[in-house]
Amino acid sequence: MEKGSKRWAKVAQEIQSHKRFLVTTHVNPDGDGIGSGIALMGHLSALGKDAVMVSSDPLPERYRFLDPERHIRTYDPSTSVGLKEEVIFVLDTSELTRLGRVQEVVENRKDQVISIDHHPFRDNFAHIHVVDDNAFATGELIYDLIQSMKGKLTKSIAEALYISILTDTGLFRYGKNPNRIHTIVLDLLKTGIDPGWISEMLFESYLPKRLQLLGAILSQLEMFFGDRVSALVVTQRMMEEFGARQEDLDGVVDYARYVIGVEVGVMFTELEDGRVKVSFRSKRELDVNQLAVRLGGGGHSRASGLVMRGSLKEVKGRVLEEIGVSLPPIQKPTKK
Ligand SMILES: [Mn+2]
Image (cartoon, rainbow, N blue to C red; front, side, top):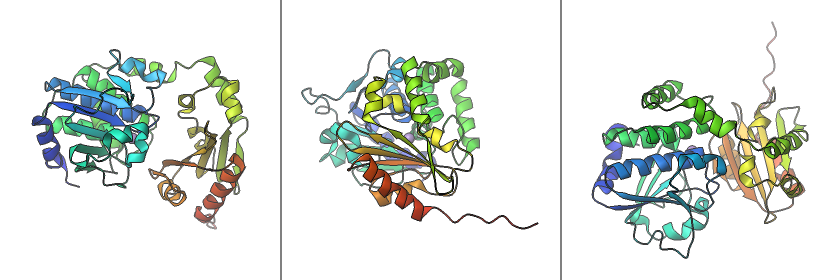
């Protein structure tokens, strides 16, 4: 992958030579998918272009403040969305199936699709791919695109990019290049965004039920393989009891990684359709992207996941077995 403005030359040309753009991201949109999408729409609007964003699932409640004018729509096949747009940006998504229902808008239009992503490359669904798995967030790539086109970093674009970076680096804790993360963030802060307010909106705006659900989940924490693997389970019954939605589980899997000595944290979530969502987090040694790929999913080396068929018990057994054979050998303490 080329660096600097060269890697953006084709994307910039597509932007300059078209008028109508569709932006989309993966199912259960997260801070990076939403933030990078809003920033890209802001950049396109500033250039006098028409841009709309659509996602398969509704925007989680806590991100609503980012889109006060409701530019992001939940996909509705009965509308004309996607028909008149000349270029489609797919953000933060390495496979078309991850688009959920929006997949039907994007497939078979490869020559109109541009993919911008930081997951390991998986699926050649676009005619332009700017895919860089060294980037810590898709928002970093959108920042780079705006810089290369000498676009203006407005306060609302900066706010969206800040959220994309904040959430995908786990609040600035992860990422291979902390210097670059903080250099970009400094640039974003110069536009006058308010990090304290953003954190309050994202992390201090939970309903009591959400924290009670978290308590119920954490109280069932289980340990495996000599306390190197921790597991959390969420059943449909718990979801019903606390009146929770899928978005209320955002970030919960991270707690599994907070246990001392744990290398892999895994969360099993029973879905409404009877399948089980499996989310992985790892600390430093085990590449959970490879682990998820072996089970039929994917993601990043420290965060990945998939959805599996079978009962909670079956899926748990199968996944723990695969973790067991993947765990790196324990380093014996060296004698002094
Ligand atoms: Mn991302």
